[in-house]
Length: 455
Image (cartoon, rainbow, N blue to C red; front, side):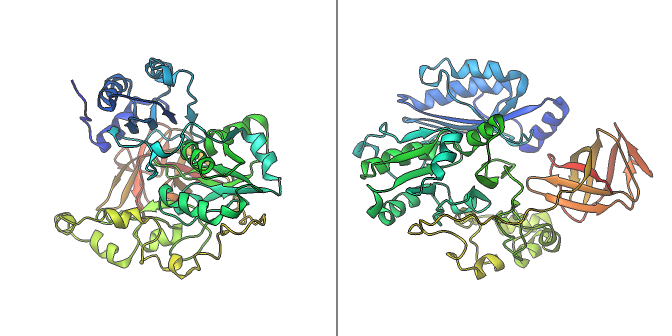
């Protein structure tokens, strides 16, 4: 039996592009008693691998937590595989707001002690005694209640780029850290206030609501399906989105645009920006927010030390990485000492504290939209000559055009085409069906899209 990936991420990306099929990105979770998580894991891998399912899935005795992508034409076959299990029949699948065919490039199903690392002893309280679920309209209505305390149950790097306007956002690195902090600092409001919680897809609030009820909070509510389902309902029902900015997601995209509001800043210069990136130095890979200008000036790196490393021969880079355990540095997402602007901020200045129950309507200034025309997508990047390759799918581009290259990690990068090769021959114009290449001052990813900027 094949219970492992046989293709690298790069090989899988090429295969996805060659297949030309639209893929759906989705997530779901279920708390249930699973007696043999290892066998459950193996059965899922054997069922999903032939369908082209890719993603990161955790299974444990307490249930399943899944984030994945799959070809759209295999959606109903996939549903059949999960509905073979009674506890997943009719389960809500949170479909992503923005789709990216490369959101996941491997199928990873891991057996864990828990599907969410909460640090709790589940035997000490009733995990099924959860808070009241609210749909989008109900959630919006309750936000207007002066006796409501809204708490973001996500980590600091998630809430930094998007949140509900009046939410309290604990400055924590992990979910488990937030639970005792919230309990302690809201202890005097267990009876007189309504505790309203939200997270990405709902799974953290399921456990947190039961925990807070166990700790004596009498009025506990949670956003059903999290931000993902809230956004779907807002669009379907024509509601006002009380969530502003981007929703952080744990895949290649690193975020889904919910509104045009920019509520965060570049960690290196302070410019309004909400594009997360990973330092291109493979020995660092720190997650942080970086604007277009800093990405060019810093070559996609978080520090000058990392810039020096990426210019070394590959073998020297590997030698530097060999034996170094940098997991903790990566874990401290957006909190490295090298992030100059981030470290000069008062960590409490921009984030409501847990004792601050006053609503705020502060919203960052919206960025003007660029008028553009879709051209195609990135297909390869040649790092040494710094050349990007693109497949032209619609319209045309020519020498002298200003183009916009856009991607979840790349951000939005503009440049003027001064010279290009079309189907390996130097040419003035590239049209639909052509493959063109030209030099870039930044790295592109396979999922990046290219647009022509219109006057």
